[in-house]
Length: 389
Ligand SMILES: NC(=O)c1ccc[n+]([C@@H]2O[C@H](COP(=O)([O-])OP(=O)(O)OC[C@H]3O[C@@H](n4cnc5c(N)ncnc54)[C@H](O)[C@@H]3O)[C@@H](O)[C@H]2O)c1
Image (cartoon, rainbow, N blue to C red; front, side, top):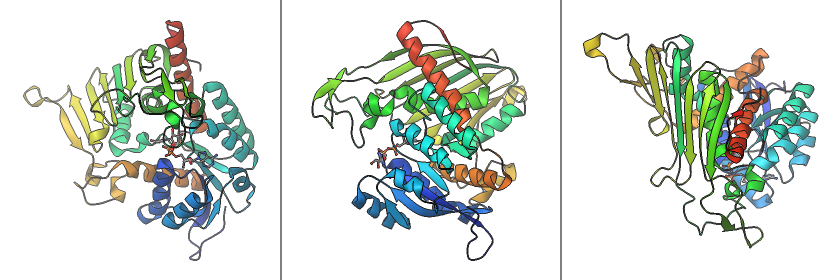
């Protein structure tokens, strides 16, 4: 880190990306775009991509413009020309890679969920804090402009006291009993690779957003279900027990006194990735929907009575000081899912230049992991469980 590029204006941050699936693509796209749209003191350089299969890594490197290829992440960590490691692999590998990367003194960006469980997450937090390396977890929905605007409205006190938080994340892609578990593309169904099912995969996003918008959680009571109990395992070829939760619903009490409901499933026929939340306060309510991600629904009880109603704010207007939007197009033209990753990289690079941690850090993401653990424990014990602090 600290090498200057040809123009001598921006410092280079040489990235080593591990895992070139869905998130490998989303992050590579963000690294390539960020300096075109944001004025920053750092410039990410696509130094190396790591995948276990050389041909796969080489094809990815050629497509995205990575300078080099590795097939073993331990070798990547040994390279002195790599400043930052980006972990885009399935959940079970986050801890070993992140802990080794911290020991190697690398900056770490890690996909969510931080870990398989909170105990593992704590060891990751210790490792990065001991090594004092900048770190961040990709809970990208915080940086959808409409969600960032929701945060600002809450911070301005526009909702007043918050009574209710309601979140859902619904999908339908695992309904077929013929779908195997494990291996490429299907590791999410294998508890040994994923840690849990919808709780760590989808609800983790809902929980991260909720903790950010509404503060910490006190206690939860949950139910989970595994609708299809046995599936063929891609790697062993045998029919094996399914260890993940296919669906999870939980109630929560936040420390600010508000009550919450959370629901996630991969069995909601017709829904592909429907993440929604609604927050009801004393003075106002807000609602957001991933399928219409540039809009924020807002109801203000302070409006004149005959005009009072839900507004749909098209969060695209820099004149209206909508977050991040001054960096993109003219007001009224919207952006999409991939931009949330560009925003997260931009914030991370700005934080590096200022020497400030950028949220969510590993420690912030551990709070989500603590909630996930309490939810899964409650589903087993059938009792209310306290969320660890
Ligand atoms: N932030 C988000 O919205 C979001 C969305 C999807 C996934 N994720 C997270 O990103 C991570 C990856 O998910 P994905 O959807 O990209 O999965 P994916 O299956 O599309 O890609 C994972 C990649 O990791 C590679 N891989 C596995 N083990 C490896 C190893 N030891 N060394 C090198 N490469 C290895 C696989 O070959 C594959 O290319 C997961 O932790 C997931 O929870 C986050």
